[in-house]
Image 1 (cartoon, rainbow, N blue to C red):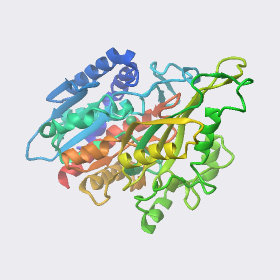
Image 2: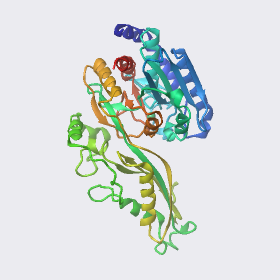
Image 3: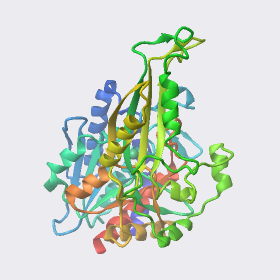
Image 4: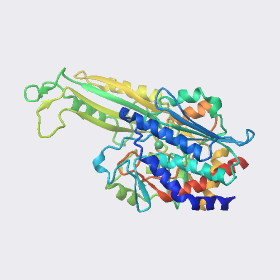
Length: 455
Ligand SMILES: [Zn+2]
């Protein structure tokens, strides 16, 4: 069986890659309404690829937003069913001038595919479609397989919860398998055992009822940019702890055992700093870098603007200043509760010289996969098979808001088997995916199905 998989992959490598590149050429940016046709075109292509790769059924299914692509291959209803989740939408490519090649014009350089969506998530969910093809064409599929590929992950999956809730039978499965994350390295394979949650707000500070002459009014009327910056600066104390009352209330402290396990992941601080171009790191005192990005909640300013930002000088005392602010959450923090806390905090700390209007963007709950679950065990065995090493369990710093919704609606556990690398430039210019990782994923996924069927 294993040899047949290897032979099939070897024979079809080139085509698998070219098919993935074709998917990357569609600018399926869910955040931009002018990409509506591209979104539809991308969904149709995914559906066709599912059918061409051995699915019995595939359909582009409407939601109130962008459609979901569903596909399935049912071999025997008494066998376990694996539901693969992925997303065909991508982040906006801007700033375009920082790309070395067109974001939707994939270029292969040094064994890497450069394009928006290469690692997040087209290149990764496509491995599952090609693994299905491998299993079907070699007659070795031992599980039922379902696919749920959505088009709104990058805008917070606003319609997926509803879709899942109203298609519970269709999506019924024994495990959910997601490749939308990264591993430590090819030498040290790892499996994510959790993702952080997210609270995202926007804060608008208004001073005077219009932009003012900074000479005539400056010094007499509060500048909303100054006030906003002061409020933002007060959010962390000298130990880089978040100062917002009740922010940490529901955080489950990681056990010593988990922290020890995490510490086994290789980490070279000098290399880390060099790679980022910083002289020194920043973070919550009392925690390592890995802990700061995995087991601890964080608060970041994602954008800030106000006043005159065009060419040259304009002596203006602006009327408004705005910031986008988000928090990454860990178990058992609740995103609705934290969002409320953030919104109230800004209103509370605002001085009477300004008015604050704060509102919510999107959020999501944190999620954890137990390492003794059947799905995690199957993934760990599959990784060991193709990498020759036991994977290190790690807590991912990112968020996949749909995780807690999927578990709640479908009642099964999620396994994260990501094949990306941390330097894939997700959401940044020059996103890439290593071709070796793409093939390694297609080689590993069949083992997951095998071990999950046997487990
Ligand atoms: Zn993603």
